[in-house]
Image (spheres, rainbow, N blue to C red):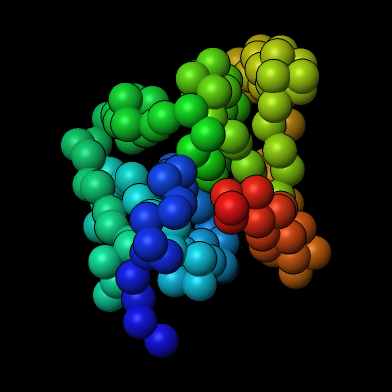
Length: 160
């Protein structure tokens, strides 16, 4: 199989907030980029291993608070897909008319992002007052399937 874009028909890109993106989700993204010809860029403050492909690249940014997020916001265009679990980043790219998908396959949208930001801020207030709120559960097979299905639905919309 030749690893080249399909006649430049797909102009949207996939952007990944890769520092916290699970390896299983990255693997799904690698396969999807090769299968569909969509460009995939992983942005992180550490080196990320990727398969050799002209469709897949990485951008290593300096360490620091929100440096990778700021780079994604700077590069994203309307209609692009951003994969992130970072709610403030999701809100910023939604404001730029990008599509957001969490690594668990949940869509972040204009309709739900404000409520998620409020819940995030509430949980942060609880944690800062000393209440232990726990962390997210591990990624399950159902989460991986939900992500792959949601990604496929997004990619299917790109085809003419």
